[in-house]
Length: 398
Image (cartoon, rainbow, N blue to C red; front, side):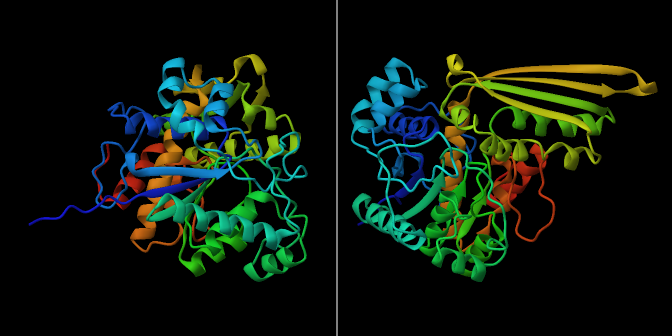
């Protein structure tokens, strides 16, 4: 007599659970649980990988400074259409974010009443770890991963506290103001044995101290800054231009968006963190420095989550003749980002099952500034990144 084995359940603890990307991701899984077979936009949906959790076996919890239930939050973000809001409303309304660790010094203009007022860094880490343990127990998940989808933080000034784990832990003990929330969440995850993915430009597990911690604990970590729209197009186009020996004389990129992420980027320090990750891809792909590579991001409230990205590319071809390429990408920011966050969670879980800890370079395809394990330059070319992931998964390129 055969007995059926219950499928593995994966708990996904999200920093920024009430944001547009997170609510879109959770709603998407709820639509699938209701019997939908619409898997467009999920890059690994057709990859039959042994041990990878099914989308329908994912459950969600997490933190947000806004304590509204996810149905209310999704309605405010205006990403989902009315049919989708109605279909997922009951499930989303049952999920409320846990009080979040936040810092106005690291993310100006983003605050809320649903804040955990911890009396120091160690207390904040302990509170996050308690939330993770409670989530795993209450959800019945076989494993938990953490994904950071919060607003962009400013990059801290490194005074040596981030260069080694010993220095970082001494800084935790003295409540060093140079340690921001993203690093506290990453540290708590690694300490709790929970894989961590950073979909934001904020400094977190990519700090040398936390990379060292993840390696010591053999906990999978990946990041940073999800590669969704304009930068994805760059990493597709730039390798083709190099292959055709078309020289890039200049590349001007601009974006307008009006969602919460765009609002956070009104702060110059947070904006600089974003520009640093968006601007790092071209030179490594092309093999030379593009002096006039300019990136501009503007908050434009009427656009909401419907981001628009313009690219003007000036190139030189045979006999020095000048040409131009224009790209206008009108996209839904969260619709592009949400499925990538889900895939990152699934791959991190699989990495932990395989005993593969530390930096997970195979996830580079999902990030603007991929983390690397041993200090070498990251791979940015999209087709090469895809091969890295598929080779690791043991599946052919899609």
